[in-house]
Amino acid sequence: MMKWMRGLLGLCWLVLLSGSALAAEPGKVEGKLIVDGKELKLNSVVSFLKEDFGKKYTTVVLTEKPVPAKAVQEDKLYQLAYSKEIQGIRLRFDDQGKFIGVIVYHPAFDGPSTEYQGFADFTKTRFDASVIQGKVSMDHQDFGEHSIHLEATFSAPVPKP
Image (tube, rainbow, N blue to C red; front, side, top):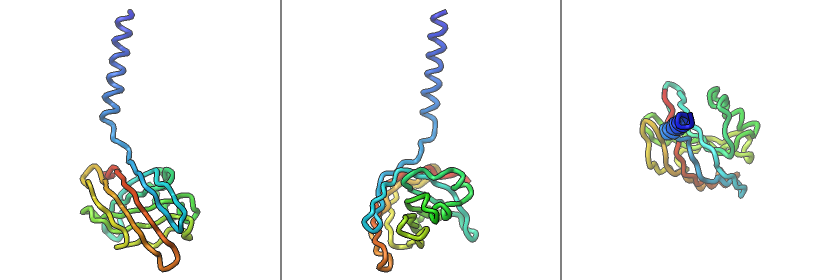
């Protein structure tokens, strides 16, 4: 009886280990956003597909705390930014993986910032059917109102259409 139980436990352990090895890795981020001298640590990453004016984009959101799944599904990020419930950045990439720009979600702004195109640098280390990863950085003076410094390295799963 004990041999049978040990065998069953061993089989269960093997199934658990193989399942975790096959499971998709969650996104990872390490970085900081500093607006007007106030630092925000970026701890969470989520990615999703979005279509605007007939063009498809991959969107990656790096935030201080996790974004609720429902907010992503219903594209409620702007509402969360206006209510100051999320803080971080949103990166946009075209369907070829070209970096478009960054939007800042920070209490210093009354809601989300405008999309900064050409002010942020993105160094891609990988962008394929399953993962987007790289480093984004920005040092910018927003029309004399806000100073923005951004440094983040991230890896996020590419969403399936």
